[in-house]
Amino acid sequence: MAFAAAKARADFPVFNRRVKGKPLVYLDSAATSQKPWSVIKALTAYYERQNANIHRGVHTLAEEGERAIEESRAKAARFVNAPKPENMVFVRNTTEAVNLVAHGWARKHLKAGDEVLVTELEHHSNLVPWQLLARDKGVRLRQIPVDDQGRIDLEAARKAVTPKTRLVAFTAMSNALGTLSPVKELVDLAHRSGALALVDGAQWVPHLKTDVQAWGCDFLAFSGHKMLAPAGVGFLYGKAELLESMDPFLGGGGMIQEVWFDRSTWNTVPHRFEAGTPSLGDYAAFGAAVDYLEACGLDALRAHEEALTGKLLGVLGAEAGVTVYGPLDPKLRGGVVSFNIEGVHPHDVGQIFDSEGVAIRVGHHCCQPLMRRLQTGGTARASVYLYNTEEDVEVFARALKKVKGFFKVGVKS
Ligand code: PMP
Image 1 (tube, helix red, strand yellow):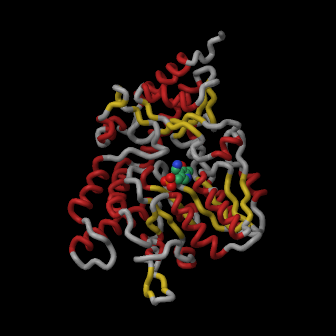
Image 2 (cartoon, helix red, strand yellow):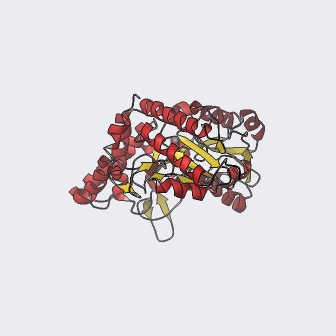
Image 3 (cartoon, helix red, strand yellow):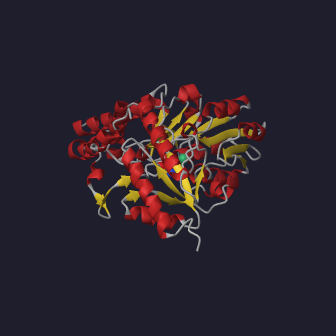
């Protein structure tokens, strides 16, 4: 395998611990990634050496802290190929980024009867904000269906777009199934009908090369915590003219230019959307996560994850009584594999895996409409990242057999 996952693993202190007396096999990076020493050190270094509030500080600590944070912004811009750091708004996470578009752009620019189009794959974070908008503004929320494999049907997408569509908001990669969306095609489809395109990059950005200019998307939302950075930092990328056209979402310190008793003027973009004291250390440490991922190389990372995903699919496919969701070709998906074992509740699957030191996620994965489409209440989900190895897949396979043995799956009584 070209990518040295076993070596990378040594950079992540969590792998020094044991779970239930066994070495940790972490297959839950789609929920949140583990953190390398470099990120943990950048976080503590901020509080050890620079801790000061940013903006308006003229002393050395404040200047150094602000520089570290602005470097993170610049690295985020480079990582997704945004034209400028000013295209990147600091937020806490993907959820906040989507809500910022809903409040700052959609509430200002959309009117009753306009349509927002999402897909059947969406995480609740890219669905509920649009439901709230629909409720408050009379905007119509519509959806692009997926096929039985959880793939977006482009023909159905074409049919779903109408002259009233003002925004197409979709995930680039499904957190529940791992399926990859035809991002460029959907962006073009939105633009051809005069709509904007918002890409939920929560799962894509940490794993696959992202180029917002090649996609041509208007907005991109993503979270730092899924890409080695601390929780508490994420970004909304927006085209400059769109960010300029938006109202602030939160009012307070830092986002204003001038304040009178009864009115205010707004700061420049992106600071207009960054009210209040942020998670300073998390923001500063984000840059170290980008450095780490860039040093790995996203092409090598993708090849590594594709190989591991293929192995996981192979293990699951070889077992009777196991249902795998999504396409079976690892090229069509990221490193996420959802499955169910006949007659066994996903929570029981998760607990038995945990008893073997294997962390997987179970449940509806914040995708209840998709689960209904797949006619299941929930699934077990394994997801891989740069620190996972072939040995991890072997332990996974043993845990799977343990579940089947315990519940006597496939054994006639
Ligand atoms: N969208 C997708 C596709 C996700 O996987 C997630 C996280 N599971 C989110 C949005 C929400 O991310 P966060 O909780 O970091 O806001």
